[in-house]
Length: 94
Figure 1 (cartoon, rainbow, N blue to C red):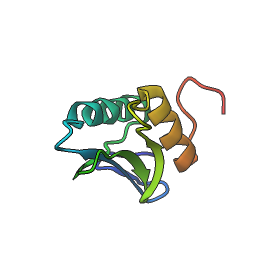
Figure 2: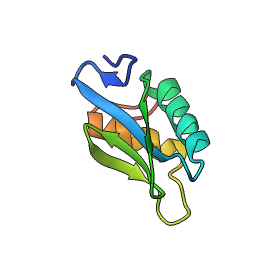
Figure 3: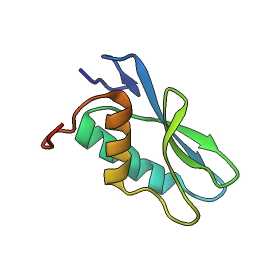
Figure 4: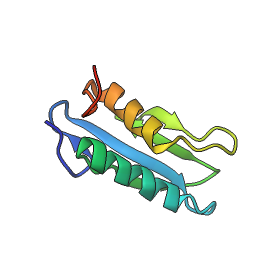
């Protein structure tokens, strides 16, 4: 079962979103965190970063990231985190 506080209690995994503060990527990080909360019931830990970073990590491993000027969609973020945690997305076939 997944739980808030950025921790997937079933697996003991930590989900975090590292975003560039000087690039003003906080709105994208908040949107991705909201999508994770709504779809999977977890709260990602938001981590201020630099150098253009926008990485979604599970246990320190990047599972979704900004590529060039393109940010991962909310659906891509949720799918990548669900896959990394080994949990099905509600409303989707495994």
